[in-house]
Length: 316
Image (cartoon, rainbow, N blue to C red; front, side, top):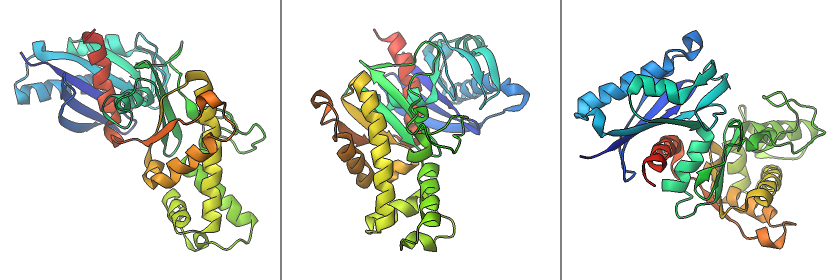
């Protein structure tokens, strides 16, 4: 009897769902809206109803469902316990237990960035290695660390929060989390735009960026690729800060590969080559020469990683 796995990536706006076979083939994917009313109390039931409806449509019996993996936008402890998830409103909730009550099958939850890293290791930019660091550069900076094929979640599920490493203790602008000088204030899409606006306001240096009414990270990278000196200097600054952060991570985890994802990664080689060049400056010899790859799964990384959570439990 063919077995199936559901990978469920829970976001603050929508919930991405994937149906996989146990060999990792994605059969179908769809989305449902995230109901954040009543402190997210309806989310587990909505997911269970969607899974039930998909099974009924495809003629899949409960006995054929090996499990449901879930990515949660917040820290998740190894047993599925979530103490606080502001993106959903959850407090003191064991996601594994709740979902198993609703679905009647094995349920395993982990942080969404961590499962994205697991997905990229399994079927994406990190395929072929067991030790990697994923860093996602979007509105903020997320990350996930995989060691010997396993997520490094830490004691309370907050492992891999790369975006909140302190890179500049003298920074006076506050990070969205409340801290100061964090990596995502410089290496995210919003971070590089913030740096660009600051540079444009403080200097008279000529740049095509001055003509942009609504400046974006893409504008900055496109200008850098075209040789704009100010844009190039901004990409260098982002690359230097990100490389320094990743060198710190490498000194602890010694990954085989760094995988860069998120919207900013669409800049391509100008980003990976810049980060790689700065990374190799001053790093200890044993940690030199790491490979920098681009993520390949995009928004599907989470559902792949969620499916792998279940596969790792049922295949020993």
